[in-house]
Each structure stands twice: as structure tokens, then as C-alpha cells.
Image (cartoon, rainbow, N blue to C red; front, top):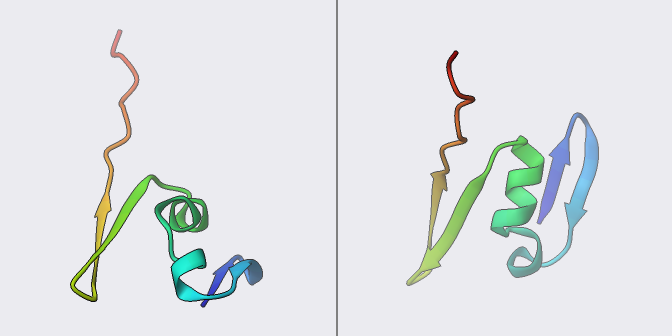
Length: 54
């Protein structure tokens, strides 16, 4: 597995070590939850808190 960000290697190695919520979140600069169930991957983008209005 290889994760690239802006043309640079962010992480590389076995899929189970590289394809993690933390690594993918860093790659996309957004909080991501990544899960694997019965061999299928699922990704959920977490909401980021909005700053208070006023």
C-alpha cells in the first residue's frame, strides 16, 4: 500500500499497517474513520466542529 499526498509518499507498507484511520485522515487532511468487515472496506468522513457564530 502507498499513500501519496501532494506527490510525496506519506506512508508505504502492508495494507493492514498503512490503510488506517489515522493515516488516511492525514492523507486527506480530514478526519476519516476506516473499518474493515468481512473483507470489505468502509470509510466515514467525520464531521468537523464548526466555529461558534457571533
